[in-house]
Length: 450
Image (cartoon, rainbow, N blue to C red; front, side):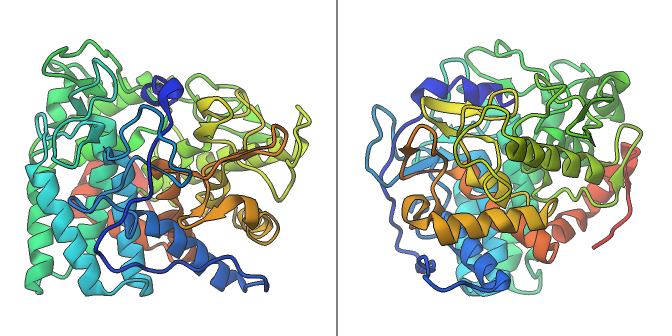
């Protein structure tokens, strides 16, 4: 579970609409006529990507942690930049270039700005903090979480490697992006986060509090990408024992649990019997392709599909009898809630539907996701749709609707829909020679099905 985001539960609020001088993609407004499936998917991708484009922080080109269209930020700083969410947004920039939402030249220029900023920004052993200010200084996530965040930085590097693979080294401007990303990648000291050579990786390190956050990354949760990158690092690689002993807990990661008839395969930490929030099926899998991916612990395509489909089945069954849950209105994941922020899941069902849960699950459950997309867009758009697509969450039971966005929810939508449509981000990330070597090192088999 995203423990460090739950620390933030009581302080999630903030922001105003951000502008940049970059060309706007002018996302489509809700239409009265029914769109074709392709047109609807274009509309969804374009609008949610625009959070990272015309909604980006202008100095860095990266994503704001949140954008509140109601202008109410409470005591929070609306200028804070998110590292992990920006990684998803970078993957979205590649999608936007490939689909023609923006020109290749515009996309490359933005990537150059992003890479230059990330090179200047504060890092610790090559790893960025959870949040940054536009100046590049650390914006503490909490008192002791004021240093390196290995997980958020891995989400960022996942997006950067997708972008690197999309660039053409024979074009000077694109080669500059490639070289800049390679330098950032090589400077990430994954081995430092073994905390003195232990066979497990740790989430946080602070120059003031060192390892006091004390969060070992043990599976299964959203952090698998960290171990893939750590094994694949060209300069600071971790041994396979970290994956097998730390992440897989010497095999204890396996699960025999089923939920609504679907085998979960992996123990969902804190939600072993019911399945966790759906972002666990999204964040590591923006680039890491679960199709054809397996090891001694799981078939990852089956594991991700079972997670998503069991969540869908739970919402259709609706054991708590919330209003508006149905086969076309489903999806529980972390996001804004009636009271602050919560990691919604079957074992933490507060009656809040978060659209990204279904929309970012298009690769795993396309028919169910399309039914939800159509319902929200065609029936609920006056309540749920704004400049950057669907708002973060709502509860029909509580009559609670907010005009607010979170980067980590908005920015997984465009790349995950693209993975359903063409597999673009999966193909790019899995084409990295370092990743291929890292998977071999971990005895993870990948048989491309794209």
